Structure formats: structure tokens, C-alpha cells
Length: 61
Image (cartoon, rainbow, N blue to C red; front, side, top):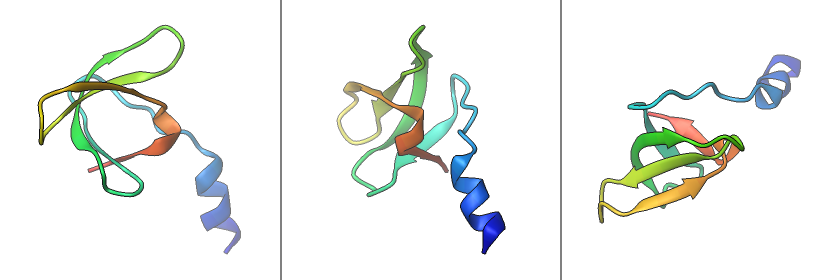
């Protein structure tokens, strides 16, 4: 139980080209850029649009 909670505190280290999805599953796509402020830019699989996201709200696929 403790290890599961500790895992939530570790932020994911994403790289350009990594496939990700949102926690709720509303966004699936590929990371195209990592911004200076820590946000990542994700290109959506569904629409091809780019969206800024916080890495804490994404899961690797």
C-alpha cells in the first residue's frame, strides 16, 4: 500500500516521441515538444491538434 502511494509522488520523465494518454482517457497522442516551464506539447491521435499539458496529468502508453 505504501509503495503504491509513493509511486504517485514520482513525476514521469517524458521525452519527445513518447506515446501518452490522459488519466481520464480523453487524450491519446505523442509528445512533440517539452516547454521550458515543464509543460509538454502533445499531438492528439484523433484530431492532430497540439495541446499543452502538465506531465502530472499524463500516463505513458
